[in-house]
Image 1 (tube, rainbow, N blue to C red):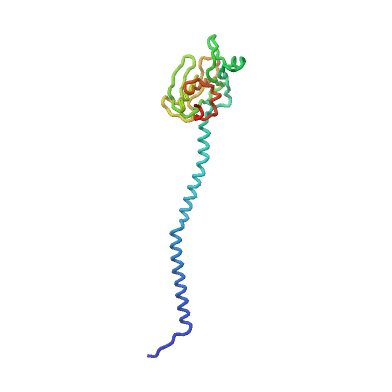
Image 2: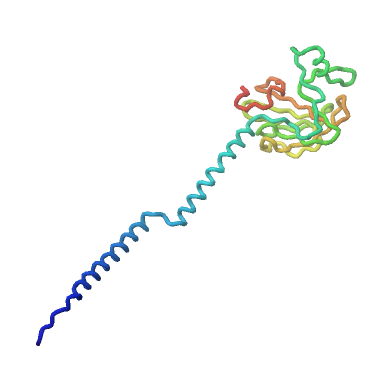
Length: 215
């Protein structure tokens, strides 16, 4: 049988094909390895969403911090202070303005008396528990709110009460509507008192502080 020699271009062509095949195999293996190491686009998207949620937590923390500060017990544009807290060290003029008149008797105001011509909302100044709701012959419906650090808030002359004894309330929750007692005004009123560790406290020194500062 007569042997034939391969033409000169055949061997280079075979070498070239082998090199190309080797390059394809290497490329395929490299891609497989990288796919295992690099997260998919779906994974990257999930990470982005998680980071956004973390960012949104900061305003919530700020909101919680502001809510820890004691707020006013009333909501209403037309609500004013009818009688302020009576202070022994105040001027005679201011002391006179802080006296409550009832049945031919002047009494020192032990809280702040708010009033308005219209019904207004009354809110929890702090987080706490409704410890008692009762009726008083002179001051009408009375509500007691107990918070942390032995802080107790007394709400007098209430109208409609929107909570019940034993309820847990958060600061700024609406707990009642204004009402009327038998004290000198015929307006809608709230008489608000504060006790810290059993001691009567001027509410004006109570507002704006954090519960942790009221020791």
